[in-house]
Length: 278
Ligand SMILES: NC(=O)c1ccc[n+]([C@@H]2O[C@H](COP(=O)([O-])OP(=O)(O)OC[C@H]3O[C@@H](n4cnc5c(N)ncnc54)[C@H](O)[C@@H]3O)[C@@H](O)[C@H]2O)c1
View 1 (cartoon, rainbow, N blue to C red):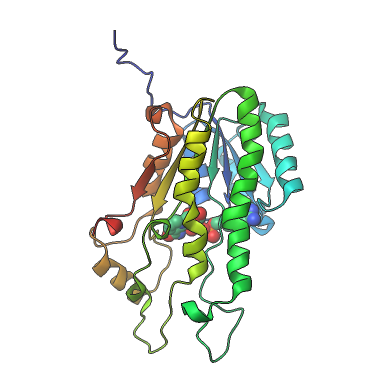
View 2 (spheres, rainbow, N blue to C red; view 1 turned 90 degrees about the horizontal axis):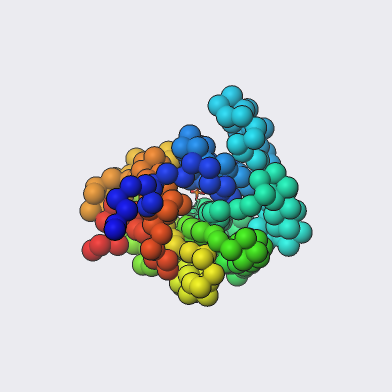
């Protein structure tokens, strides 16, 4: 008999979910929505400056047993272990990890000068290494810590946050502001995010018999006070003709965090308005 009831429910109520980079744009959106949907959420981030405001917002809306604001540097072994200890101390288990923390180096302000640093042949190797350290090594490090917990408890669900630049090259004309100062999406982001799809497949197959699933979301172009020219450029290149509203990520994240996606592992869920479709 097929159970047509709630077995594959989209509900995430009661799930304990760790979101890294949760003080940033996407992480905060997902965290707030998950709390509204009844999940218990650990919001973890390296940037403690934003912690106070977020704490005020959360305590106005949710009781303190529902959330944890956790300082976490995913590139630091001790910080990862402290976070895990605190999470287990408060909630006792961890159902879902969302690997959302990342560096997206904005156009180079650290190395100003006459040479255009955003061009591939000029891109500073120290900036590349910084992005690799966070987006690749840091993502692996925090996932190792979480997988030890998930192996012990016998279940788990990991959602990696990729990017369209994990699967296709940037169309550099997007960054042409028509001001005779050409800017390019630097190679560090593309290099460090390209590992996410295959890391997702690696984890999915590695843990396939351990009741631990792993999938990735591939978002693109979340609207966030971009300039007029950028928005126009984006609209011309996008099949849907517009940027993504941050709320439009909630459904896909909820789906992957819920049991409705129970037969999915090793998949990429693309949320890009068709960007990679042509
Ligand atoms: N914004 C977009 O349009 C877009 C598109 C595709 C993919 N993404 C991906 O979505 C994710 C979130 O992006 P966002 O736009 O919200 O960025 P954001 O910069 O607003 O948030 C990223 C957060 O990660 C945190 N962080 C950085 N290094 C960290 C570390 N070592 N340890 C813990 N936290 C750390 C930052 O403090 C920040 O709060 C990233 O993985 C990004 O690559 C974003």
